Length: 171
Image 1 (cartoon, rainbow, N blue to C red):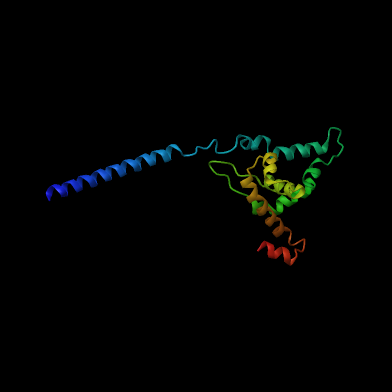
Image 2: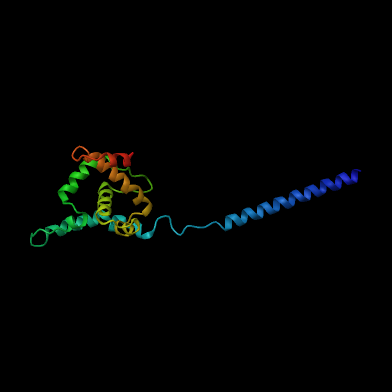
C-alpha cells in the first residue's frame, strides 16, 4: 500500500515536471517568434521638419512673390485659398486644433494640420498619398482631418449658416 502511494506520488511529480518543462518551452518559443518592428516611425516621415508642409508652404509663399515682383498663385493653387485667408483661418481655429509637444516628439503644427486638411478637401487624395506629401502617417491624418473639419465648422458657423442635415451628421 505504501509502495503504491509512493509510486503515484512519483508519477504525479514526473507529470508536473513534464508539464512545467513543456510550459517553459512554449514560453521561450513565444518570445523568439515575437515579430520585431523594423522601425518605430518610417524614416521618410522622420524628415517632416526638413521636407514637411511648413517648408512647402514657405516655398509656395516665396514663389508667389516671384523674382521680378510679379504675383503668382502657387499657394492659392495648392490650397485653393490665399495666404491672407489661410492666416485668418489659422487665427480662428488655431487654439482648437493646437497640440502640445512632448518629450518624445514634437506635435504636428497648426499650420500643417490646416494645410493637410485643406489639401485633402481640395483634391480628395487618399490619406496614403497625403502621407508622402506631408510626411505625416496615415493614422495621424485620419485623426487630423475630421478634427480640423469640425473646428472649421464651429469657427465659421457664425459666418455661414450650416444646414440641419450637417448638424445631424456632426452629432
